[in-house]
Amino acid sequence: MEQPRAKRKLAAILSADAVGYSRLMQADEAGTVAFLQEHRALIRRIVEDHHGRIVNAPGDSVLAEFPSAVEAVGGAIEIQNALARRHAELAPDRRMSFRIGVNLGDVIEEADGSLYGDGVNIAARLEALAEGGGVCISGKVFDEVEGKVDMRFDFIGEKEVKNIARPVRAFRLRLPAASALEQAAGAVRPAPLALPDKPSIVVLPFENMSGDPEQSYFADGIAEDLMTALSKISGLFVIARNSAFTYKGRAVNVQDVSRALGVRYVIEGSVRKAGNRVRITAQLIDGTSGGHLWAERYDRNLDDIFALQDEVTDKIVQALALRLSAGEQAGLAHKGTQNLEAYEAFLRGRELFWLLTKDGVAMAQPLLERAVKLDPGFGAAYATFALAHNVEYLNRWSEAPERSQQSAVVLVQRALALDPHDPWVHFAACLVYLWDKRHDESLAAGRQALELEPNFAPAHEALGASLIYAGRPGKALPHLDTAMRLNPFYPDIYLYTVGLAYCLLGRYTEAIEVLRRRLARNPASEFTHVLLAACHGHLGETELARADWAAALRVNPSYSLVDRRKVVPFKNPSDFDRIVAGLRKAGIDQALALASAPPPTGV
Image (tube, rainbow, N blue to C red; front, top):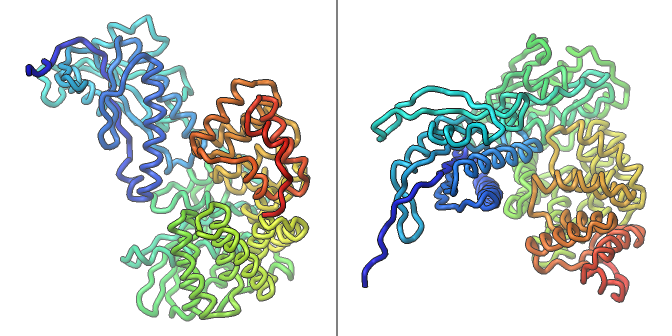
């Protein structure tokens, strides 16, 4: 049988690849792969909207063809704008920018749809000339789109490119000033956050100088404990761990950090741990001027680490000329353990817990269990162990989720009995009691956590969530605002919590705007899609509601309102009914059926 012959044709070719893909893979392999897949899905949709097709997508690259140069350039512009909007919600080190090259030329199409030839090769070479978040086009494309696309074109010369005999005329595309493309490429910085009305500071991750990457947990732990100590001082404004640690492993300019986080002071440091010796260096810098205010190096036995942490904190307090109350002095002196082995096991377990992944939480638990066995009075370790079980319950990661929640309650009660002066313990209790539907105890624990540590961003968010589920969403919003200011690179769950508050207050348009931002960062959240569907239903936007409901079922085909009602910790059933009512207005079958379902009987 005669094989189908390859054919020649004229096509507009788009070639794209991710910038910094290898760096992102080293930092978070699984997360980067998932992020790349999300980006590819978005690119595929835009390509198809412009009557193109994806030819191939090897590694971190995408090759597409279009029937015209105008469609190809229009698709490239829309891709970069869409990615820029998505990146606006991400910390700089989490962004995955693409560079794009577009060419118009003769190509060879194989029977399976593959494309070859100079038309493809030139597109790839133009891609290499583009910046992250930018688009570079050939002279042939320019000749076709000039006057047809509302864009500015910068001629960058005739470029000698690999394996192409003649130089290629190349142009870079620019949108009007302050465009999304330029923002994605980093050419336009966001407006700086206003400085708080009191001394403001961020503790950057300390550099691990031990020569062993496995020791990074110890350097991280020192920085986090210093951050926690300073957060107890009411006269300070201290940036949260989540935002501070986005700078881990990066060479930073302290003035850029000051601008991005809206703080005046920056603490940098390093830790070298070898045998029973530890060297810690720390410096306090004025981020607005770059001037050094204080610096010190400490060489001590590892057994002295707790006293050394106190000394570094005291030096910073003195350098900032802060006056502490008697309660704050006592809070700074408070230590959860004096057992070095227990402390190291706790630091390793806490680092794994902060990954908030199924594997990370599972690996954290034996380390936290070891910490409490080595020091049965270590309240913070019990609290973190409780949170690990609570996260397993919420995500259904364990074989018996309800048993995980029961374990969380027992562990957090033990932590409270052992160490009622630790804000982390009360934060854990706020969350564990919330999902056990013990609303009064959850609220009391959240308030106590903030009494002990006013700058505790996760506790502000947890108390906000507790207030929402207790039927007081209006009271929650100030806490959520504070959490976001303390944590400018906040996790996307914060947006869901704010959106839920707006929904329950009947502020549906505001809820939709916030929830769409959440989906831009986490499109795989079925709960966000469901809440969006309810908000659209209340506004009479039936088609949008049904589209979001369908999206929720694509993420989780077994999603059930009946099951969800059993788990969510609403104190007032009418709050969940408000969500269902929005779905019912849109004619969604599950919501209509729920009207005749029996009431929930417990978690």
